[in-house]
Length: 77
Image (cartoon, rainbow, N blue to C red):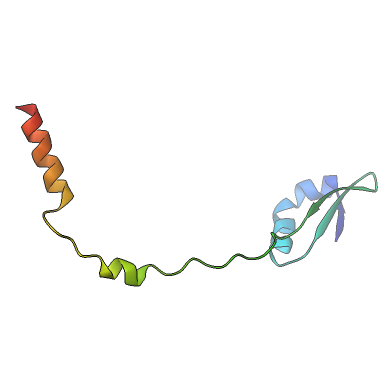
């Protein structure tokens, strides 16, 4: 799709939606190409789920908040 600069300014959001769907948008100034909006190369692979990892974490000792409060109280006196 080709579009001039003035129209691109007023329709940027819809142009980005089209690019997101895989289209390429060419922006023209006085009939000459000045820019291209293209989707990023490769989608990249999604990050793995951390659900199992989080479930495997076991807390040992007292909660950190208790330690922080205790240390602050000891420092004050």
